[in-house]
Image 1 (cartoon, rainbow, N blue to C red):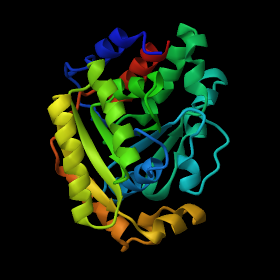
Image 2: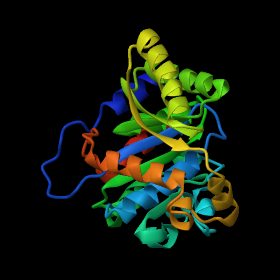
Image 3: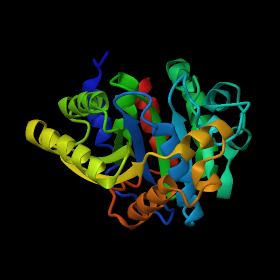
Image 4: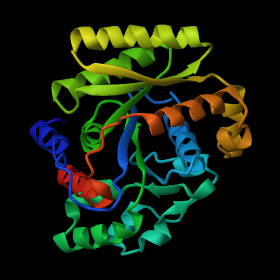
Length: 289
């Protein structure tokens, strides 16, 4: 499964030389988790909208192959995904969803699985179409859960890795297994943590400290806290109503937590390899070919 570890390591280090260009390059953040059901996609959608509300230009790339549902969480049912751009020659404008406050959503669908079949002409045509997506501030990549080559590939493509977990012991164990694989293949040497569904800050702090101590002791990786998100019944209502809670219940605890995290992201010194959208997808093509 992970026989291309060397390729992952090499591609993780690509793009670190800054290009001399006036074009703004986005911060590319991969958001993932060790197991499903921890609220990862809900977090990504609401964070993307909140960043957009604060004046940032955001693209959400739903990279959960076969299980993409960010569109449903936003209340949309798109006709197309990245597969249609690459293989059916659809225009990027036909496939991109423009959500609340102008946040953009691109669904990966099954398109990533078809990359091996692409000709160089098809790849170049797709990359040219991405030109309309430049001048972004953030690209949030929402991956599938678990430890597999696809998830590790998307982690190798990003500037910053965010791992979401809950206080449940199984969530901590699965998150640790994921980070252990990232460390084993030398894909990243640092990560950011979100503790989701906490009952109070004390529970969030205890969960984070327990995880941080294990990772720093046994894996020698740098661990940073990005924030906590409170357990909130409005999250369940938001999913059922297909309306993100930062819009439907902007004053609820979870929405306030997301706003705090978004401000932290905007004010932080996150790594930025100046890849740009085209070079990001070039890396994705190289990894999944």
